[in-house]
Length: 158
Image 1 (cartoon, rainbow, N blue to C red):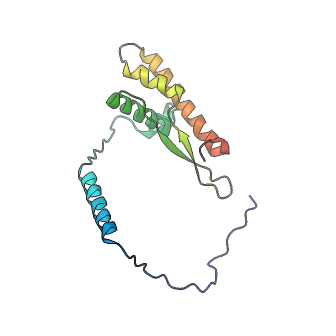
Image 2: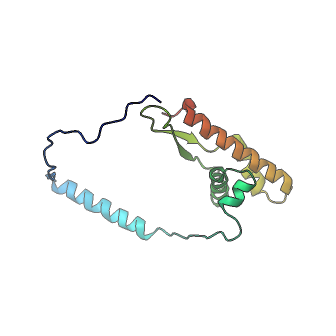
């Protein structure tokens, strides 16, 4: 790409790092203690369950020509909708590493296609399996297109 590579370690004489000492007021110390208590309570209130999918995984999803990332995103949106009765506002990061100093771009994962899929799945008795599969595929294709657009500099967030 014609980008010059950095030389090995530069021969600068840098001072050794020093530990920073902060002067805390009693009010700030109390606020930090309170924040730590809130954090510990949040950790204690967090449940984690790992579900091992025995019937299919990334290989099967790829075999049926669906992006595993998009498949999971649609699953997250459907789960959120079933739990809360509303659509989530999901952000996913996309790398822009093909650009010099590229970082990330934000992708809004909720699209009109994902909304159509989620709503069809949420009302199980109203849509045929073929319709749901079609909507899933369309939502996944749209998701991949949004990611590619953002990775190619077409994002609108950053």
